Amino acid sequence: MKTVSSHQQPGRSFRELYCEQRGISERVFVEVVFKKSSYVMARVLYPLIVRMQPDFFRVDIDLVASAGELRSMRGYGMVMMRYNYLSPEDGFGREWLRLRISRGRLRELLQQTFEMERSREARIQALLGAGEKIATPCEIQLP
Image (tube, rainbow, N blue to C red; front, top):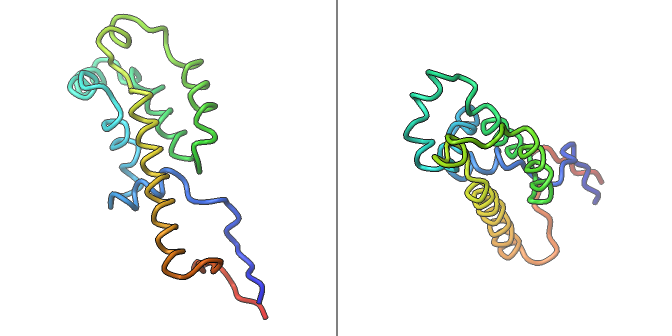
């Protein structure tokens, strides 16, 4: 029996996995991950800063959105290169007060999320037995 799948992507995105694992809506993903991966001072001052300079965190928000599309850690380096290129000159606020995202915290969230998914898949495979494939709803069984 052959299996044909309409889902050709090599896994689900960080956004999909993160939201599923933590029981949150994908609509709030960027906001939640931004807050989780930002430095404390950025989280505390965020409401005040965006009131005075609405685009201050734009590059950080874009970084989270781009990271949300990753399907593995493989593309993380390219996402970070883009962030570093687009990031405003580090000044007093971004550098000294750390009014920005923590790249390390974001990387840790990505690693934890993908690791949780790998562990879940390994447990399922162990329960099903070696070599069996898990069918997904979008797969069609052909004789």
